[in-house]
Image 1: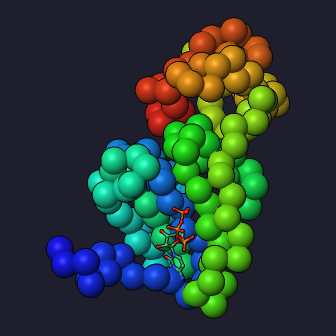
Image 2 (image 1 turned 45 degrees about the vertical axis):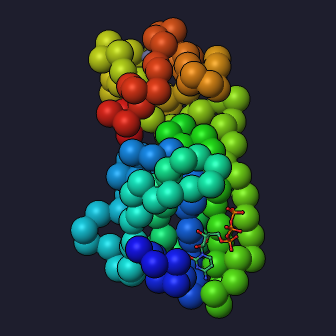
Length: 154
Ligand code: CTP
Ligand code: ZN
């Protein structure tokens, strides 16, 4: 593609999730609860060339500014992602995603017998034991979840 051609056009207002680990754009869309029935334009780029990552995925969501809890969930799958808030075509806020030490209510425990999967009113809670490679430990049953287990648990 010629240098002069824009591959994915700029947006006026919304959020650009950039530098997503290649292969994870669809997981990010799933975490954010974006289905085929939402309003607003959503543009997905996969395997886009990147100077720093080799190749990356990106998701542009028009008309929606992501909030902190949503940003924390993205960190589980795309630890190098940057979240750009766009207003009137300008980047007004750019933040790198950051994994909190404790993750509550974002994902379900992969152990079916875990009390957090029962009808008891307990909220799932995980401790981040290691960020890279990702290791989460369930507060209730001690079950260890790794990166490849995460997309199934949203
Ligand atoms: N972007 C967009 N629409 C705009 C402004 C920016 O879609 N109106 C996108 C850009 O295409 C880029 C991301 O938002 O993917 C961040 O924009 P910018 O900070 O201008 O780009 P870079 O400097 O390349 O960002 P970084 O340093 O994070 O790589
Ligand atoms: Zn558990």
